[in-house]
Length: 233
Ligand SMILES: Nc1ncnc2c1ncn2[C@@H]1O[C@H](COP(=O)(O)OP(=O)(O)OP(=O)(O)O)[C@@H](O)[C@H]1O
Ligand SMILES: Nc1ccn([C@@H]2O[C@H](COP(=O)(O)O)[C@@H](O)[C@H]2O)c(=O)n1
Image (cartoon, rainbow, N blue to C red; front, side):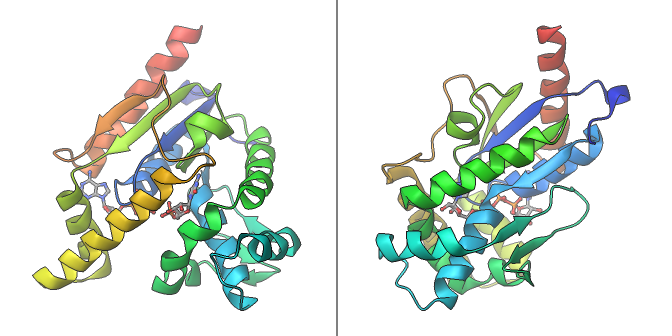
C-alpha cells in the first residue's frame, strides 16, 4: 500500500520527456516526498532488450523480438528507494544501464507487440498503488491518459549532454559531443516511431529544467501535484 494521506497526494503523476532531462532522478525524489510508489518504465524496455540480446536476435528484426519478449519474465520493483529489475529471475539492474543495451533499446521498444505486453504490465503495477509516479515516454499519452498530473520534462540538448557526462564521469569535449550525438539519435528514434511516439500529452504541464536545479524541479512537480489534487476535490 503506497500513498501518504498526510502528504495530501493520492493519485497518478506521469513524467515523460526526452533522454537525460532528469525524469528518473526527479520521479524518484517526488515519489519519496509524497510517499508514493515509483515506476521506471524505461527499465522495463531495457530489461526486454537484455532478453533480446541474450537470445542473439537482431534488435531490428521485429518478429523475432516480439517472440523473444513474449517468452521473457520481466520483473521490476515499484519502490523509490531500491531498484529491482530482473529477467527470468536474473538481476539485470546494472546491466540495463550499459552501452550495449542503450544502443539497442529504441529498436526493441518500437515493436508494437513489445509495447502492448509491457503497457499491460505497467497498468497492473499502477493499479496496485494508491499513489504512484510513473516515468517514461508515453505515460501521459498512452499508458495513463487519465492521470492526476502529467508533466513533460525538457532541457536544452547541451545541458542534457553535460549532465549525463557528469553522471558517467566523462570529461573531454569529444566525450561530451559523442554523448550528445547518442542522446539525439535515441530521441529521434523514440519520437519518430509509429506506435506511441515520444510527445507531450495535450494536457501535460511542460517543465523546462535547463536553468533549474534538480531539487528545484522536484519542488515544482510536488507543488503541481498538490494543486492538481486540490483542483479535483
Ligand atoms: N535539473 C537538473 N540539473 C542538473 N542535473 C540534473 C537535473 N536533473 C537531473 N540531473 C542529473 O542529470 C542526470 C540524468 O538524469 P536522469 O537519469 O534522471 O535523466 P532521465 O531523463 O531519466 O534520462 P533517461 O531517459 O536517459 O533515462 C543525473 O545524473 C541527474 O542527477
Ligand atoms: N515509456 C517508455 C519508456 C522507455 N521507452 C524506451 O526505452 C528507452 C530507455 O528509456 P530510459 O528512460 O531508461 O532511458 C527509451 O529510449 C525508449 O526507447 C519507451 O519507448 N517508452
